[in-house]
Image (spheres, one colour):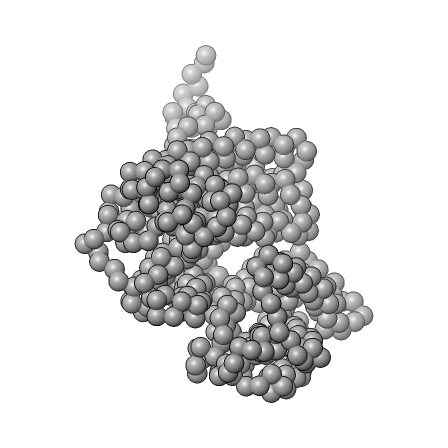
Length: 196
Length: 312
């Protein structure tokens, strides 16, 4: 969603306004991320409430601080990743939008969205090294269900460190990509191209 | 009348103003379908478009298969055909229902062409159905590939000679009509709504996913939810396709303790019952959708919603 946001803005003719305004585009994206973060957190709280009350899911949490830190780091890394992808929309339109759509479900699969990522073996390990969703989910599962036993994946604190590294790398790359894509889009006159 | 000696081909043809009935409808449908296909597919080369079309349903099916494996262990292998068929068909439903609604939203909010289409001589509903056909075709392709992946990669036992072809053809035709009808309802809703209507089809389809037995049998649901499942034509469509492809396999409608068993005294519905209930529920949904669309169209026209852009 973070990535596709610039696509919608471009199609509505707002993108040129963002670039013409006296501010950094990253600040716009961070503002959007904060809005998205509030929405995502609300949804997560609702799901946790229903899971607990309706389905009787019981959590066993011993490290609250680490759990909260992992949650925030996961969102930060995910939004950094989203900002990186958002830079593609400065240059391209439908192609980039469809490619992000193409990646969504396979990323859910290799991230172990609905099952432990450790079950995927090498692919799961690769996902933990590269995809914030995979590593964040696995760490939160380990922290929320302490008694589940060995998962075949790194300890939560190790995964938290991976998330810190991902956040720094993705936000740094997003900054560089946004700048270089903007330069390229200006040269090729693509900033104002709509509906394609 | 004075004959000025014009060539008959140059004279005014009254049929151009009053329309040519079915011929015009077919031409509008064909043109809209062609336009819809180009809008869906011309952003890339055919190979990438093919990958794009099948990646989502295949990944969804793999997620469900792995969930099943984690939860049920080796016993889950027997349920793979059930899950694969439901998952494949569901991607078809999502594509089909979203197609028409997104055609309305695309044309109104993004390309701002809806008002021009509406005032053109073509039938509005025919144009929308044509536009939705492309997405339905993409969904069908994804469903077919998901089934193929299930058989070839995941080892789902499939015997082409055991398939009940007449049942398959009948339920597929009735199912497509039902999905188009649901899509027409969503299009009528999206004509009325304002911002952020893009997710409405997915939300509605997501809610239906719970009650139609796509990946688990209705018997696991509380009785009131089973009632919703039994009156939904999609439940019977999915059950019919399962029954046709894997005769004698587990049914999503019946089963021990299910509402179906309590009502009918039978463990599972037979093919004739599936077709009859699908026909009746599908007919009700189809007629209802036509009425809803007409009412929605009239309301949208009355309130000036057709040329409104809400910036979503």
